[in-house]
Image (cartoon, rainbow, N blue to C red):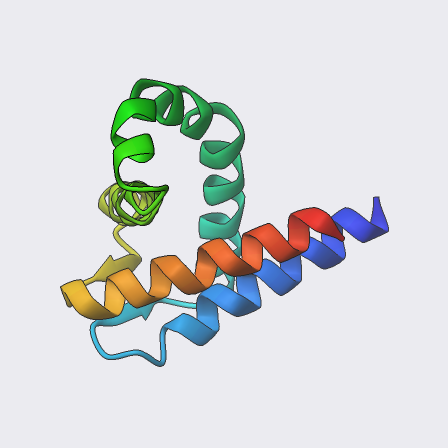
Length: 109
């Protein structure tokens, strides 16, 4: 249980760190914790279904379409949580890559 809490806090810190990019804001650390929890739930329940539906596109692009999926999921989460806003496309794309890499690393630990 402690390991799960530590991963959650680290993931929220990564989300706060991406807010240093221009065009990305989170109101406070509590909302970063909420965003981290929602990203985890989306990655567990919704993302496998979307990846299955977009499998042919992923095969044609050698998996690069996953970056677009990650960006779309992050943008969708920012739509439902107004305290987490993505204003700049490039910064949001970079943040989605950083969050995806950190989620991958934290999942392996």
